[in-house]
Length: 181
Image 1 (cartoon, rainbow, N blue to C red):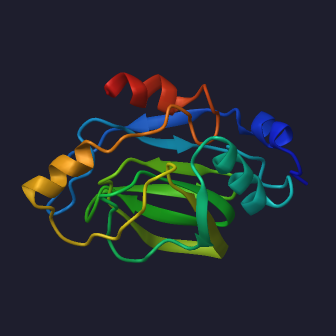
Image 2 (cartoon, rainbow, N blue to C red):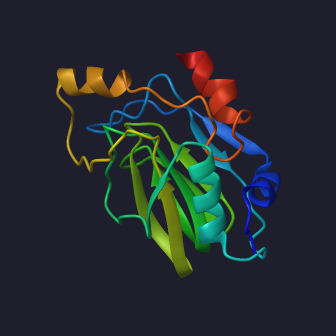
């Protein structure tokens, strides 16, 4: 149903919620950049949501890299920021590490996690699937232990694109991330 970038981009205009997370145990979270939760970024009944998210991410310099679920263990990425578009199903995800904030996400929602943000699948309903995108030039890793001071410095120095993964030249990356730099 989303066969062109213009149609997909018009569907992406949405309300969002931002929140900061403090470091928690071995999970650094991100001291400068907020997590962004896009509610109903795409209409859940509007066709192939995975393809629509992939199209949006690609056109906004956050190339999609995979379709799957979310790991059911606490982890974070130190070498890349991550956007997750929910293509189907629903889930509760713990954001921020063990004992963190539980967020319910469902088809059409998206979650933008700055590097260092802990996340873990707590439960899911239906055929839960997300599409993941990362800024061009960044390669994700999987971390399950504390960073060294040098690794933390490198993570905090990661560049981020000037475009929001959903709303391009508008949206929370432009409004909140670019001003944090």
